[in-house]
Length: 158
Image (cartoon, rainbow, N blue to C red; front, top):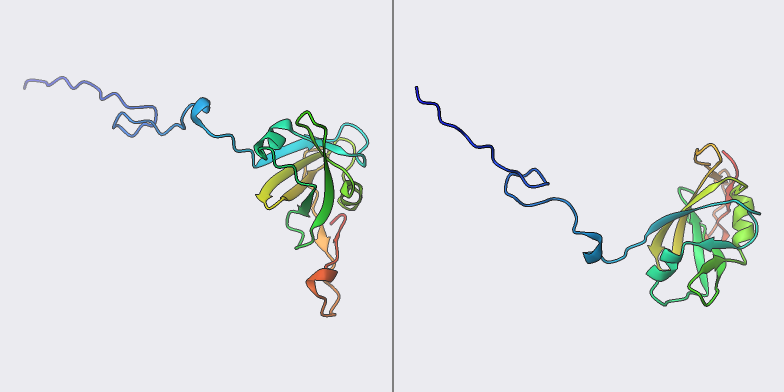
């Protein structure tokens, strides 16, 4: 029986067999999208915090006077935090950060993860120095009918 030599089909990087690639385009053709980032708390956790320059660049010249922080999985409470810009493209969380940090146990060595939700809202997760996430709970034990304006803050820690 004559053997037919079969030349292996060269597959593209994506492995679909059609020569196309499932890899994303090279970085030069991607638009800059920075929706998530983190900061590491190396100094006093209660003073203003610098956010990554790439995030400030992502805002493309929009310089909000304030942002709203919401602890992930911690109800609808938004914490209003004033924002400062230094004229060199750096963005800082300022007045209001201290209250958020105290309530959510931000301390030396914490990693603070932010996810930009649009409309100046940042969802926040706090991780301690062991890289474990800090969880909180809302005080929902009250049976009073409270309006959303009276939402109680998360209580630290669970």
